[in-house]
Length: 441
Image (cartoon, rainbow, N blue to C red; front, side, top):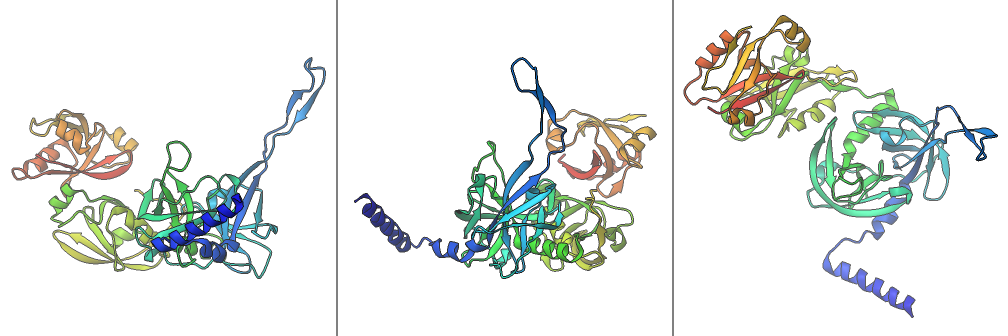
């Protein structure tokens, strides 16, 4: 009797779901599940054995060998001849990688290659005729669209969860080349490397990480767009490594104050605060205080948009940039350098009462230690509004507006040229990185 009641309730739920217009994920799971695999990454423990007692009186001891470490993750098959996509952090450092298919077949996988900046790894199984997951287009994803994940959270293989797309183009610290897809799809440890699937049954991303105060799911999940993963996989398959274009600029967001100063209608684009010597940017004529607003016709809405757009192009590629300079847009053509695995950034005192902070000339020792050739150093910040602007003691002021500063005398002269009420725009160097600071007066 209870069984019949459960069947009836299940049928009623299905009918209610269809009537309400909510999606039915059952056919989607059947269509895509066979291509999702479980991954076990085994890492040998290299620590020497410890001698431990086997009786309470320590009359006999034996060596205790530390156990190997096993991490669990997910992946999905992208070609019938056995290529599998997953996250690098799932398999990095592993001495043995086991891949288990839904039909219980098990293979020892070959690591074709891995890429740290994107956190992508490509595996190869010695098999043919395998089920595959079709790749979609993450650019077509809309905020609020239904998506589904299949993975092995906490070692529970082939667990299915669903949610919606919360945002696109998210940036994470240390991962500037990945514009993450944010969802509220519940994922946990073990989901890493599994597919994010749209309602067409296409992989649109790779579930990679969560943000959490507890270590468990809290509604913030992030996936690598499938275009990024596919490009990395193709390069790993062909060359064994990934090459990225490099422009050679340091950038920061355009704040409302900087937009007002530069006469931009809205705060958008990537504000250039540093141009590396000999770089593609310098050769193309890009200048500090330029705002890059487009790359090959693709809009740069925020500073976070620029690195993925440039990094997705091969070294030697000519790109057409639209930069905002001196109140108008300008076309700049640059031939990209190669990112070789490193990420490019990039005496007397003076204290007028009206500024609210003090500066001093730089000593030669400080210049060498801080890696600058000129500037003045901030020695005190007295005014609350200056502190709110972000200026700190120890900052080195390189420019006032567009004019370089080599001494406190020159700094005083540049400040004196400002019109009444004009904001003080400073290019400062802090811990090796440049940034703009706008101080209202």
